[in-house]
Each structure stands twice: as C-alpha cells, then as structure tokens.
Length: 230
Image 1: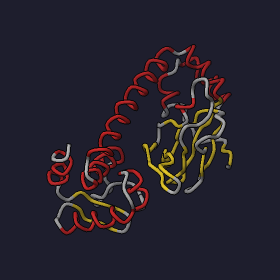
Image 2: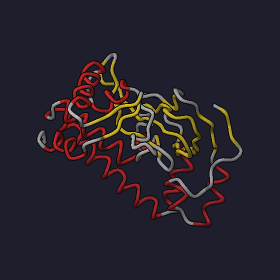
Image 3: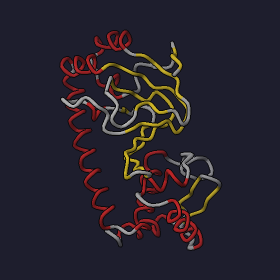
Image 4: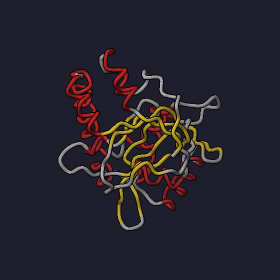
C-alpha cells in the first residue's frame, strides 16, 4: 500500500467529526493515510487486528465467508465510514474481511490509540454505541431475510439499500460500479440466480441496466417485491 502525505482533511470521518478539537492534533500525529486500489484487501477474516481504518475516498466492501467458495457482503463503506471496528475486545482478530471496490484512500490508526481516543472523547464513545446497535439491528434483519425472504425480494431490498447509500448518477443509475457477483453476495444469492432475476425485473419494467450499472425504473414495483415477502 502506498502512503500518502495528504488527503485526510481531519473533518470527514467518524473519528474527526466527533472528537474534541483539542484532540485533532493527536489524530494527525497518529494516523497513516494510505492509497488503495480496486481489488486490494485491507485485512482478511481471522487476521490479527492491528487497528481501525477510516475511508477517506473510494468504496470498500466488508464481507465474510459463507461457505468454502462463497462470501456474504455485510455492508459497504464509503467516505466517512470505518472498518475493523468489530475487532475491539479480547479476541483481537478481524471477524470479517475488507476489500477495495473503488480506488481511493483510507486512514489507519492503531487499536491502542483508538482506545485512548474513546477514553478521552465521550461523544465518540456514545456514537460508537449507537453504531453497534444499528449494526446489530441490520444484522438481525438480514439474517431473517436470508431465512424467510425469496431471492427476488432480497435482490429488490439490496438495490433499494444501494440506492439509499450511494445515490444516483446524472443518468439515474445507482452510483456504484458493482459486479453481478458482488450484488449476489450482498443479496445472499448465487450469481446465476441474480442474473436471471435481474433479467426478469428488466423485462417486467422494474429495472434498466447499462453494463454493471442498474436503474430502478419502477420504485413502487420494486418496493412491492420487498413488502409482499416480508
């Protein structure tokens, strides 16, 4: 990974936005800003945890092994997001993997400094508690969907979530360059099933596609797929 001397504005990420202003110089002194490229793995599930990453630019997927040859994408992190936070605690290993989807830059701080930051900055500690609570709720919802929701509903929900997180480009397509395999991993389905279901949704006038990009043409129709399966 290439080290950058510039790129972090000490304002955008979770850590910098919430910390005491007097603590910013300490963050500047203890962080390392790293250029990352598409396909690069920041850390792997089971690796010894060394620190926390904050996304400065680009997109990173957080994923976990599903079985021997499959993965489940847990979430995506963009500018301002954090990675490796679930490694806090006694078992200091990363429980998930993080791989770059869109080239950019991340800031890295050690676990030791991050724990010191939490002790000094009560706002960060409180917001981190809210983050964990939201992650737990989302995880429980996804596990329920994987168990009970048919695959077309899960694909519809995945597309709605992606549109909410990344917005649309000037042509109305969801603003993320996502392969069909990654979409399948996010929806908890196989590539072949997602390919077939997307074609059906395009034929039904719910979606349109342009290469890897997807547009929700009929929002009410896509929402109905989710609601009728819940």
